[in-house]
Image 1 (cartoon, one colour):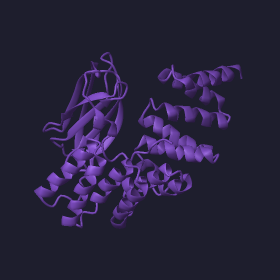
Image 2 (tube, one colour):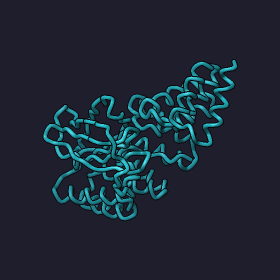
Image 3 (spheres, one colour):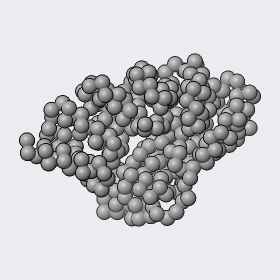
Image 4 (cartoon, helix red, strand yellow):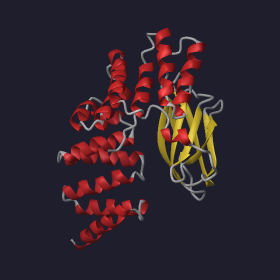
Length: 306
């Protein structure tokens, strides 16, 4: 089963990142990071991972909130944004080669209210995040627990603990921590997604769907969650709903081949052969050499005869 990620913390593959130079090229990407009021944020740590080679680098924003990635390969990149006192974010972007102009990326970070009471707490929280980013999920949990002992009102720390337990595949403990966040913020999107992800990874898609449905569609920004929800609808023959989620997943990550494949199957199920053909041809552009590609080519050959 596809492992769900909540999207609040860094893409975990950075934990094993060796920072080789396999990402260098001639592409250019510029972006800006602001707070919720539109003020530029300085010192935001940005981690960029080139998906194809699993390598990347780090940079930071300047006083204008600006960051830049120069001399990089074209393709799909995972980008993570971290600043102590703000909820981290991760996105997926496609950087074009040097012949084309890349649209600048603008991100807004949400300040976590009532969390960072003292400088000591900031440092401890950062230590927990660093351990998490290094893949030391088990070691991060006592750090978060110690913060909660000193600052029991800092309930948002349970979200971090939930992520750590989730990566350890202890979904029951992860769920408990996400629910503690929801005791204080009943509409906390990341905590709701976290609970849904726990049920999804435990194989209870019905319960997962129950939780995912608590979130307004437009607030789901994680392509994996969108894919999972779409698949639940697809498996229950709710193809119109499945289309909505698959299409959004592909909008967020245009080379998300699993979502593209399912999108094509959904159009087939609805009898929309023209759209199915278009989607399957798009699939081959992104994934021409995988074992599934021959099956997709078979769909294309069939549809062209219709």
